Length: 301
Image 1 (spheres, helix red, strand yellow):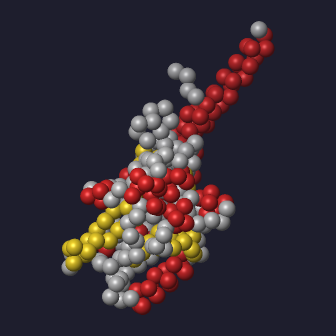
Image 2 (cartoon, one colour; image 1 turned 90 degrees about the vertical axis):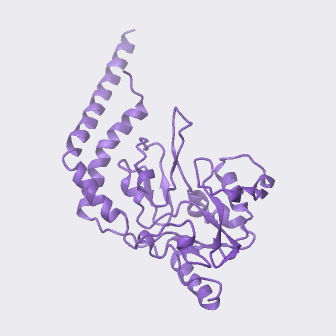
Image 3 (cartoon, one colour; image 1 turned 180 degrees about the vertical axis):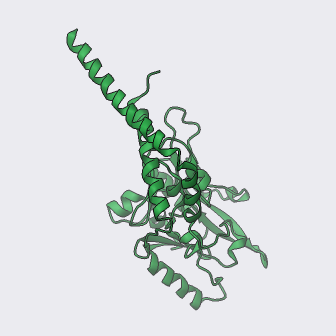
């Protein structure tokens, strides 16, 4: 069976990745990244008007859809709960206040870009990584399609391109990495928001601003900034008029998920990693020898 160069290097990277990730996680399971000065976004669900312009801007920026802005004016989509998928990195849903059922609020959901991402911890080849500026970024070339990241994510965000049989990828919000880190601009969804329901900035500044809003308007907000501590903290933070158990955001403890999962991973792969890595290295040598042999045969023709 002939294996492509890309698939071969993915196989080799799997072995090497398993050695490096499991050894690091076993030695430093509690290692954390200080994200207080990294980028984040504050989502104010009280202010959000559900215009869905953020959905359109996201699709335009990531070239996932060619639909016009007018299509996103359709509010009947709120009749059914939606989740981000491989063609829509962010969606807006509605929720109500149990005490005032007729009053609805809108909530934008996307990748939370966690401080200690479970998806990054679960990825055995390093296809996902947490950038020091905040975004959790994805390298499709390294991805082997194991989809462990999808299982690990407590927010159920990563989506897989099942319809792409030849070269499927894991898709999610990129935090507009090129715009934010490369060009110093705001994410596309934030830039287009007409009601300033989305605020981009330094994470600690956003937390301070969120509590200021709560203090100045205690009758409008519940005293809780979601994402400040949940799952070890997230780059995307939320304000709401009701307890978050009435929204679609999951109830999570402050413990980073990798602190638990990495110990389990290490126990599973402890004896399995060395031979797998060795097979990857041996495969690389065989691949190189075959190339040299082919070049030699060509030269004699």
